[in-house]
Image (cartoon, rainbow over the protein chains, first blue to last red):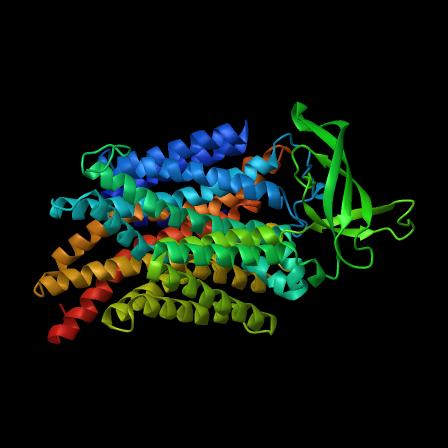
Length: 253
Length: 369
């Protein structure tokens, strides 16, 4: 606990003294996001709480952390669209791969250690909630980078039409894609380093690829990657039409 | 052009999927495909604080797909709780690994136990969707990303192998951080001054968080690793400490690289446009850019690290385990990795600006600004 407190103190001090105003503001966003996660954990009904959490996290990160303008508004709409698509996808995968609950490899979480499984909370929905929460941070980041970059292009090149802007958005997105995916990859390998040590020591390839431990991890990495790629065309389309003063659904001139 | 690519990706994907869906003969364990399920209620269990848990019994008939019993039908009984914390609910069409009881015969009816689920098709499906999207939407950069992920996985595998071979884990993590970041940065930009700057800033920032956490771990009270997920047993305190420090280094690496690339690119752009830019002005502009991306990046690190502990939190809370205990035991490592990652993000910004102004100005005019 002492270690966490010292790290938290260093983090807060660094935000206040090294970072600028927005970094300081991000402390507030962070605390709110932590509270939102905690609300999901109270677990009234994972599904509705997660839906509300997604909306709140997006509003907080986009509108509070940044400001309400055409950039953040188009990012928000795109994030909602992608979250809706990903929800269906994750639910499908989750149902067919049985990823819920605690795998046998997580041996400290067992009935015999006082963790009774009779908790009256659907772990399938919980796992969907986890994966949605994992991707939401990453897709907001990508969406915001594309809308800000595209805004500069749209302002400096008034003659560019909606279609040209869409392709500019795609190319901005493509350029940040690799680093976003790498960021996720490294966080995950750090998180599951010990698990992978066990795999190489005790599992055959066939056991590993079918185990719940492995599938939970690899599928959540892949799903967040999918979210990061999917947001690029969506946000480019939304922002391109919005910046040209047209509704997203109106027909192209 | 896009249509051809789409068709090629779709066909390749479907072929691979069909193959993994029918790879029964590759397995030595018996696999059965569930044909029919009838389900009855198996009563309610009272959990803590009036929590009710409903149990169900599934009577499953399944067809064996490989091995000596291939083609036979087996019956399986499976009991699950509605929450599915440790138990599994099966659906029609699921493929499961089974242990067939040899005392029955095909005539009197074979019975079996389920030992696990066949998940390979689903993993391959999700990975294929990712690769397909990267190639179709990401274009050239997407293919690069797939390539660099591939290289990362191979490097990571080499790292695990060397660890099992007895190499010191912290040494491995340091060597691998240097290897990972050099390869990725060179893949993105090629080998030039910008890459060198970004690399220097990345490694410096990783070193800073490494030193901070090492000091805290060795000077503070011993950490309790009993609750670290999947920690290989048996372990020594120092061994576990070193694994944890390695995790911190690797966890920070990706995001630090991301920030370092953005900031050094901005700095070099500014310095190229105005070689006489004062260090103060450079500092201000880059801090502005850094400030814009910091919040979103910290969010990414927060959610990816901390979201995974939600199921753990909920099972602990519902078993009457208090908040501080959960914080201390179960979520300690995730929160620590998040905090070190966040510190890494913030300190990378001044480090990158420093690296950029140092390298570029010296390179241009042979003097230090």
